[in-house]
Image 1: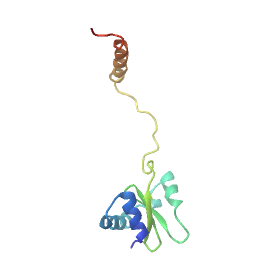
Image 2: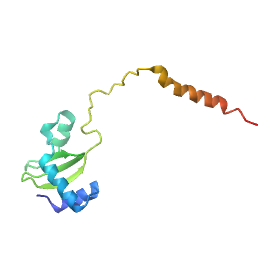
Image 3: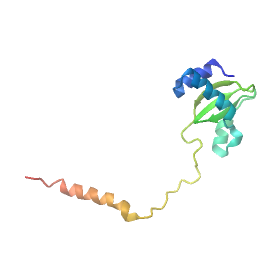
Image 4: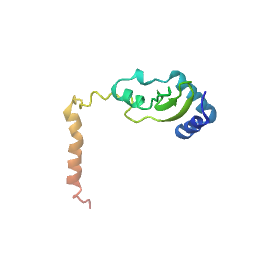
Length: 120
């Protein structure tokens, strides 16, 4: 089940037709992941949309669906870009061949030196 508002929002925000939007919502309610499926930041984000009346947030295909206790979709919106990404390793990876990457800088210096040269 779904509300008319949820179908409208899905059509508007995901750019889908009526039939695709209804199917998308059904799949989200059936297959979407709740807050208990995630850890740390994602868990807290989805848990912040949970309510006392039994409504919960469900993540599905880069969208968040608010679902009531009776499994009726109320609304949907896009999840933030960071949601679901691995936020643990922010360190830069070591370059294997440093000379390969320094060639770009060398070409820039040559172009600057040749800019003063005028062909006759």
